[in-house]
Structure formats: C-alpha cells, structure tokens
Image 1 (cartoon, helix red, strand yellow):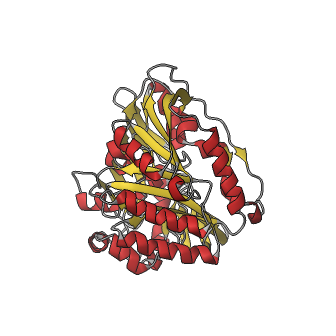
Image 2: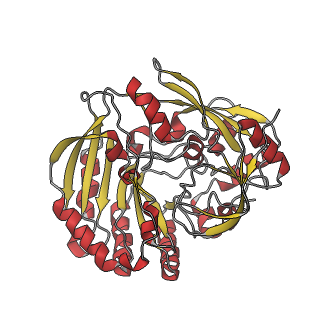
Image 3: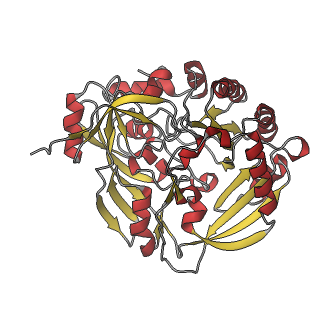
Length: 442
C-alpha cells in the first residue's frame, strides 16, 4: 500500500542564493514508491533535495522534494561501497563512514547536499585535478523515468542514460538510489599547507608546482587591482595519517534574519579582503579537522541571509587552460572595475572533462564568487557570460540564475545529444525546471 503524500500548500521557493523566487507546489512523498505515485499525478515536475543549488535549477511550479527518502541501504566497511537513497545528505554519510575509515571521493563546499543533488549537479571539489567529479565515483544509480519505469544505470549499463543523468540537473528522471565508492582514510584530520600568492599568476603557478597535492584551492582577493590583482591564499591539503577517526560534527550557529543589504558594499568587502590577506601566514603547515577544511561555511547556518532579502548569485565559470591565466586576468579586471566583488571568491584548477553530457568541468581554471543581487549585477553577469563564452569557457549550471539560451547552447555543445537521451527515456516535458525552460530545453 502506498503511503499518502504530504503535500504543502503553494509556497515560495528559491535556490540557496534566494534569486529568483517562484510560487510552487512542494510535494513531499513519504517513500520511494510515493515518488512514482506523484510522478503519475503530475504532468511535469522537478526533483528537489536540500535546495542548495544556487539559482533556479530546482525551481518549478511543481517540485518533488526527496529529502524524506533518506535511508541507508548498505555499507561495506571492508570495501567502502555505500548504497543509499537519494535524499541522504553528504553530512549523514560522513557521520556513518569516517569512523570506519572511509571518506567521500569528491565533495563540494557544503555537506548539506543530498546524494541525488550531488549526482544531478555532478559536483566537484578541491581534488578535481586528480579525482574528477562525484559522478565518476558512482557505481550505479536507480532512476524513476518519466514513463514510470524504474531502471538502474551505470558506466557499463544504459551508459547513455547514466552519462546524461550525472550532471543532468534532474532532467532525465528522479534519482532514487545510488551506490558510491568511497575512499579510504586513516584520520579525520587534514594536513593543510598555506601559501600566499601575490598575484593571479603566482597562484596559478602554485597550482602547477603542487599539482600532485590531493586537494588545492585558493581564496582570491577579487577587488585588488594592478600588480596585486588576483592575490590569493592557496590552501593545499592531504589526509593525515594520524589523529584518529573521530569526526566531530557540530550544529551550526544560525543567522536568524536577513541582514541589511547595505552592510555589504565595496568598502566592507575591500576591508575584509585586506584583513584576510594580512592575517594569512605564508608557507605554514598545520593539522585541521575535516569539517572546517572542506565545509567552513557549514558552521554558519543560513549564511545566505547575510546578502539581504534580495539574495545573491554565486557565479562560477571555467576557462580552458590554454591562455587561462591571461584570460582570467582580463575577467578579474572587469570584475574589479565593477566594484561588485565578494567576500567569497574561490579559485581552483580542473583536470580533464568527463563523459557526462552537461558536466561543468573542463581542464583549466575555475573561479567562483558571490554577487549581491541587483539589476546592475544581472547586466554584469551577461557581460561576463559573453567574455567567458568567447574564451572557450562556460558557466556552472548549478549556480546559474541568469544565463541566456544562446550562451548555454554555445558553451554546452552536447546539449542536443542530452535532449536525444531525454527523448529516448521519456523525460521531455515530464521533467522541467525554471532553469531548463530559460535555457531552451524541452
């Protein structure tokens, strides 16, 4: 017998950035079987997990919230093979597996992401240059198709569906269950080495010099200009061999209300950047716990409220490695001159692209930064989109909120193959989001 769904009244939803918003019917099935029932009842919907994609990729008139499908199905502490429902979060996984000596093979900058969301976004982390994306460590996934059929896809079975689903923004079906290969660790600690780079060129050179490091990421001062443009604090990381496997997962301190947007302006951002740069120590090695190394912002619940009620856009793009440094300088100059930079600007290197049709990473350099939402920011992002596209790069769909259809189709050249796979498996029209409609997907 299928459990009755819990359906909320129509409510306003948004991505983590708070822009754009949409009135939506949010359906919360009580079980995996309930997902199929709701799919049959509605002509079109999109699956939604923790709502941590930044823009409108999980916005739609009808959304199927899968966070109640959060059961662990199997975990082999000898092999690190984990099978879980799609609503299980990465945070939940860490609580179970780290004490047995297993860690996520790839993790984004927050642990408040569901397994389904991590696959749909094909998320990347600080180790893309050596480990690729999350989807490259998915052994298999079970998917509810638009036809109502439930199938299992893997890198060797229904390969076209698998490679369209990993990074497919939930547009091929509802991910129900996934099996993931974790990596072994000896400790819940990270050995972190910090390097100060006086310019963008020095930061990218550090990525090259330390390319064998398992993890690498740089905070970048996106408001510095001239010779200091792109000055950075590069943070390298390796799993420690000592310190034990006791993972401390603390509850976050919650931001209670939206703060006045006026508190975030070019003056306060510049002051923060100067202070952060001055405080950072060069060539310093220390041991830090996993949580603050991988998820520093998880300590502050609702940090998105700091940008005010209008919200923000987290803009992340990637540029090909060839001419990547000089092109990145050109874009950083444009951003610095706009005065619309952010506290959170993160530079990383990417390794080669994978086979997933809409997966974001290509080999090169990627920059992510926040912009407080305003009409002038939308105009700036469109200018940046044009620059990125002209340089052979592209924008991360999981964070996109304003990209135009022409830009998307020019920078994701496999979109037609993606649509063909969706047609083959009955997804066209059945699964749609505000983003997919904006980008001209059927």
